[in-house]
Image (tube, rainbow, N blue to C red; front, side, top):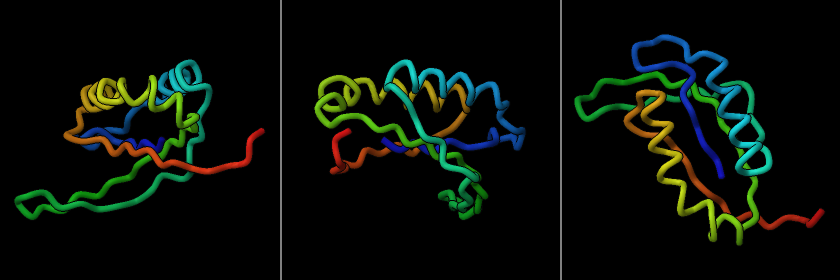
Length: 105
């Protein structure tokens, strides 16, 4: 699962590091771990009125076994995204899941 989160609130204020520390603890507790891709990604997007916004985002990768994802995580994904949108004051949060084939450890 990949989640992209902004580094700033919509008013331009920096999101406190403590927010990401707590989120990372949640990822470890609920999913068993995470990888934070550094540095922040840079992108732009245009709203319906034509205004262009700069986005700096942190990407989190959370590796979850496909069967566990389908049985437990997928059902709760909407709640996680809603919580992230509300706490960060965002209209949308990018989150997607890729089925990855990997060597078993």
